[in-house]
Image: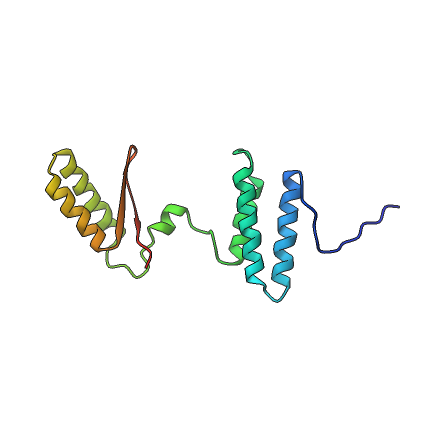
Length: 143
């Protein structure tokens, strides 16, 4: 007979499924410890570090991160949606998209004054623009 002792502590895992179980147990132990949120968040951050080191085709840890984050109300929106959230803002997503389209048209027409004016208007409404090779992306400034 083989006996296994369960101590609530885990050694450093090796395989992805072992790693997933390791983080799941640590998160659960933190939550069972009088809802130890700081420790639970620390586990999530360690899990993120592990995900960043894992091969891209590795999905089990990403699924686990979302599962554990859900228990704290975190990581449930796509990043773009979260960063463009309209919480307490005066300008809608549709208005932002319209102003960006007008700005891009002004830039295409080389009307730099109008393009700058539209960028400033967006900035006054808490919208940050990022012009890249794949077009213009935006996000709301944090308050």
